Image 1: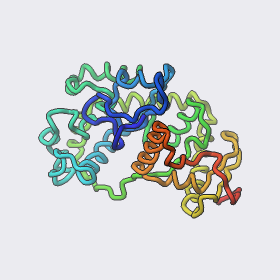
Image 2: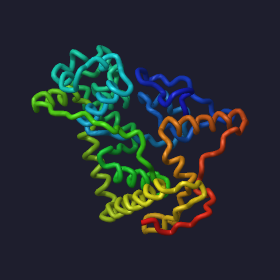
Image 3: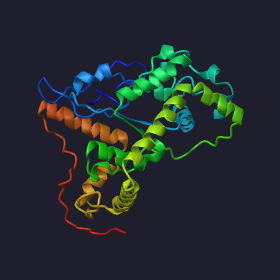
Length: 311
């Protein structure tokens, strides 16, 4: 399900409007929603199969706030942050800078807002456990940014995906990071204000590791296997100059043999916006029956060079 333009469905409202129509005639259902959205199950449930699975990912709140401050002040400026001199100034008097409407903030319990927290409950501490329970009842799996490899393996197992399905290339990573030296009492105060995000992360951090433990002692072996495959794919994609070059990843205890073509590397190296525009254009082309775009490379992409090892 694609937004009609841009790469987000909404930021300040739970309403979902302006989507690319489904390429088939009604009745229809979409398969994936992976763009940013202020989540409300009732707004999207009708567009997906009855057995849809909701998956989200949380980040440690302090790291999330620091990253969001830098991004929404320096990269994609929001009015309430673009004139703040430093992160230290922001932390020293958070509420002076924060918008009155929590939906306009990207640093104040934003993960909870994105997962459907009603803005009028933001300062109601008694609602925190109610909201955490709501998220637990709604989402089938909550993953953790700080444990990305473990998260991918858990996702792979729960959705019965292949190892190739979770291979990725890092994109849109911040290349410069602000230096943060904050007095402990100010950091503690900021995290106290982030009470919803702190409660969410603490709750689902514990549940995440319960899930991992329940997978058994061989889980970490699969994580190491994924990391090893990832390293091989990164090296291959950084060197492959031809779309018909090919890396063969041999079978392991956790995956069948599969290939990564140079053409697939081109897709993996795309930025989010590039991939978003290409995939949306492809869906629009299917809808209008004007197949003007080449399809995204798939596992069967032909390879003229068979590279069995790439160490």
